[in-house]
Structure formats: structure tokens, C-alpha cells
Image (cartoon, rainbow, N blue to C red):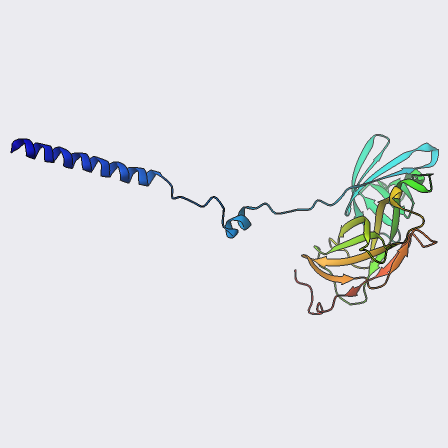
Length: 261
């Protein structure tokens, strides 16, 4: 009898130990999850896509054989001259495109430009004059960089917010049976500026075929919402067309309620 009682007590103690171990393991083991995260999890954990604006390198040859190299990204410029580099921002100008760091100024218009020291505004000093865009021709096509410039404006009396973006494209529109081929694209943030907004769109001259037809497109968007775009065709570069145009864009239908910021 005593042996049975002892055996029963031992079995009960062993069962209690096993139950305690199972509870401990359950507490330490995290709940199982699906190997495929939910759409909500993917949306929150997936990195956001931030498209870095393209930097364009443009070289100029100036009087005396001096060379000025300009690196452009939206409204920012880095100008190198005689082994020195100047970080600049686009500023208001009467004509052409002007960049400044408060002392040194790079001013370009079409294929030409000059570099100036405006430390003393009453006595500006030209650092590089009569600068011409570097081009070399061969086999019917140009090499190096090309540029089309001008302004974009609209007739509506409304201001764009600072985060408004003007997107310019140079397209090959020679084949009417196929979508246009984008030769170059550049984006300009308004950053407090208003229309008419000046632009310079740089492209690889080697991509231009003299027998093809090219056109500019412009659109203005705010937070991804397209507000204005051009409805008129602006042919440029080839077949005697200009490299400077003043473009007009029209408000997209349904956007008359104003800008959503």
C-alpha cells in the first residue's frame, strides 16, 4: 500500500514538472507569424522611393582658353574654374539664367555665359568672359552637350507653392505611330519663384539626328498632382527650329479648385 502511494506521488510530481516546463516554453517562444508579411506591414516597412534629380555637366570654353565647368541639379549649381569650385543657387535675373553664392556669379543665356566676381557690386570683375558651350561635330552629329532654353508661364492669376515642380522634356517626335522618345528630362522646383519660370534643358548632342523632329513638353505638378501642361507643340533644334522658346501651359481640366498642398 505504501509503495502504491509513493509511486502515485512520484507520478504526480513528474506531471507537475512537465506542465511547468510546457508553460515556460510557451512563454519564451514568440507566437508564430506568417513568412509573408501582410500588405499593411509591407507598406509601412518598404522604403520610400526618392528619385534623385539628375546632375548635368556642361563645359564652356572662354576667352584666353579658360574653361568653366558647370554641374547643374534643379536650381543648384557647382561651378569650377581654375581649380576652384563654387556652390551656387539660382537667383532672379532679367534675362538668361543666373546662379550666385552671394559673391561669385555664373550667368548663362543659351549657349553662352560668363563668370563674374560681384564681391563689390559697384565694381564687378569678370573672371571668365565670352564663354561658349563646348561642341564638336563629326559624322553628321554633334558631340558634347546641347541646351534649349526659354520660359514657362500660364495665364491664370494664381501662385504656385514652394514644392511645385516644373518638369521639362525634350522628345523625339519623328515617328507619329510610336510614343515619343525622351531625349532629356530636367526638373525645377519653384522654391518660392513664380511664372514666367526660366529654364535650361541640357541634352547629349550625340542623341540628336538632324533628320529627326524634336519638341519640348512642360508640366507643372504639386505633390504629384499635375496642374498645368502644354497643349501647343514646341518644335526645337532641327529643321531650322529655335533652341530658345517661351512656352505657355494650360490648366488641367478639373484643377480649377486650387492647389492641394
